[in-house]
Image (cartoon, rainbow, N blue to C red; front, side, top):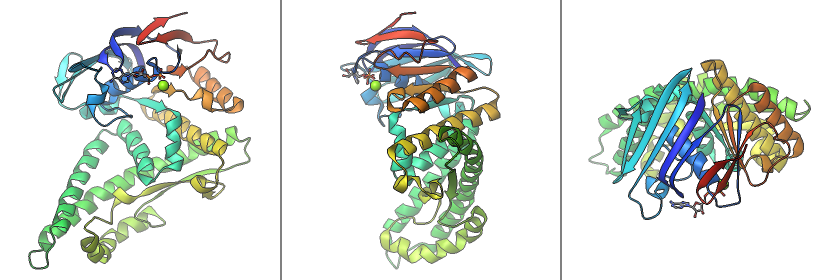
Length: 364
Ligand SMILES: Nc1ncnc2c1ncn2[C@@H]1O[C@H](COP(=O)(O)OP(=O)(O)O)[C@@H](O)[C@H]1O
Ligand SMILES: [Mg+2]
C-alpha cells in the first residue's frame, strides 16, 4: 500500500497544503511545533477515519475554522484509490473514488497502515485496554468484520449494564438478562477466537525479530489471556458458568464482569512480565518487535506491506535498534514516512521534506 499525495485544508495548523510523497523512505524534518505530527495524523485520519491522538474531530479543525477537508491518492493492491474526508458541523463525510461512503469501516479492511510513535510504549506500560486496542486494530485491518463484531458486542454490553444499573429486586428482568448474556457469549467467543488467533501468529514472528534485536539471548512471548483462563478452549467452555457465578457480583457492582472486554494480552520477556521486569530499552525492543511483526503479518496476509508512519521514533532508539529498523525498511522497500527534528546521517537514501510553520517543502 502506498500514499501518492495528500492535501490538507484547515486541518490542524495547515491552511491549504499539498504534498507529494515518493516510494521508499520519506523524511519530514523540522523543529518542534511546525506540523510534522499533524501531517502523519492527517494521513492516518484519512485512512482510518480516526485520530490516534484525540477523540473529537473538533480539535483537528484549524483554529477559528468550521470545516476541514483531507484528500489523498493511494495505491492499494495496485489499484488507485482516491480518499476524501470532510468534517463540518460535527458531521464526518467520506468519499472513496468520489463516491460517498457511509462508514469507512466498510472499507477499512482493504486499507493497511501502521503507525508507530514513542507513545506506543503504553502497549507495555499501560493497562489491558491498550493491548486489546492493539489487537483489535490489527485484526480490523485484516478482517473488516471484526469492527462490526466489536460494535455489536459493545452495544450488548451497554444494554446489559443499563439493566444492571436499574436493578431492583422486584422488577429485575431475568429473561432479558439471559438474552443479553447469550449474545455476549455468542459475540464474545468470536472476539476471543480472533484475538487468540492473531496472538498466536504474532508470537512466532515477534519472537524471531526480538531474537535478532537481542542477539538471540532473550525470548519474547505473547499470550492472549481470555476470561482469566489458561487456555482459550477452557475460557470458551467455561464462559456460561463464569457468567452465572459472577451474576451476584455484577448486580452488586452494576457492571459486566465477564467477557473479552476485560481480557489482556500478556507480553513476556524470558517468561516474566515485560511491564514489571523489562528495562526501558528492553521495553522499546518489545514494542519494536511487535510493530515489525504486525507489518510482516499484514504482508503475509495481503501480499503487500502496509504504509508505515514513524513519528519521532528514531531518536528514541539506540544505535543498534535504529540501524536494525532502518535496514528493515530499506531492505523491504516498504514506503515509510519518518518525522525527525534534525537530519540523521543514517538516512541518506530517502526523500527529504522540510516542515516549517504549516508549510511543507521538498528538499531533495
Ligand atoms: N487545531 C489546531 N489549529 C491550528 N494549529 C494547531 C491545531 N492543533 C495544533 N496546532 C499547532 O500545530 C503545531 C504542532 O504541530 P505538530 O505537528 O504536533 O508539531 P511537530 O512538528 O513538533 O510534530 C503547534 O504549533 C500547534 O500550536
Ligand atoms: Mg511531533
